[in-house]
Image (cartoon, rainbow, N blue to C red; front, side):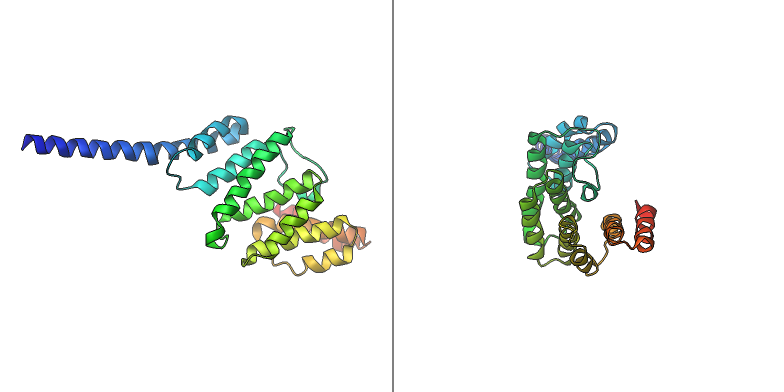
Length: 221
């Protein structure tokens, strides 16, 4: 009887240990990474990497996205409005490569679920931000085309926003405006949408309308 009790106890302890190692420790790593990310992104990277190297990753897409963001550091959230990097950190080509790989992995891992994960949409937008910041127009056009071909309205919506930006940079303001007016606003992207339309109307000489859109962008951003 005592032997049976000991065996059951050992099995229980073993299962508890496995639970802690496979579930609790990775969860703690992710939590510490998020906390450190607020204080200084480079400090968070090791914890994100530890989480991503664990055999069970219940929040893998989130971890990949946060890891990519921590690599980019001061990379500006609204790169669509600029022609280069914004922020405090100078990103090296290696930084950019690692961040892109993390974001691309998210898209790959969500392909069987029709890209419905919120971090998939964030990663998709970020890949195009990187293309803009590095002045890689061919890559930007690739990702715009990629989004158009997906059976997901939000992904297509993001694609329209960046396509509008592309024609804006080509000074085809009328086409950019037409594309953007076919865009169904999503809260995460409203700031970019309004700012871009404001800039388009400014270039077209409609200052009153431009200011209206800039005010809308300011109220959100």
